Length: 232
Image (cartoon, rainbow, N blue to C red; front, top):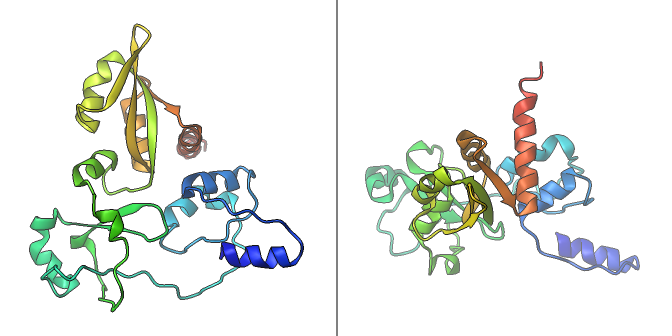
């Protein structure tokens, strides 16, 4: 859609340059009036979480497709022939399906045992290249619960007594460096989500997000929304 609008604007004499960006900073920028229009919002499902977080500050100005579909497909080497059969083998898959949303820039996983009204599509598989070097262990470390999100390297500043908490969550190979006498900083790969922010909040004042700035802003907005629930 962005390229279509680019052509239309250029026909009206505008010089248009298209830049790629992650969804989280796009929605954050729109909500803070740092950007004006985003042309590729997939609703009601794919970008639902972003609309839940920022929707009250945004305006949907129109629909391009009313019946866009997202399907679930499997590679040929999978011997199971139907989605319903997955439940019978859920122990082999940890009750999860891990998949990539083509073009969304994120990997999501799904609970097989909580699906209903599913169907198989005759469609080419997408995301194969992304899974050639997929590290399931690393994915599990950065993902909090069943909540995926945009990948980011987040810098945390923590009190020294929380070193074990950080190592337990992110592994022994996490980057950690002393910061003053009482604190250290850690750089951790995270799928930024409300569940991650909840984890930070649960640890309390001994841990804070130092960067990147867009993640700090998202966390501030998360906290403001939580506090707003208790302002009555």
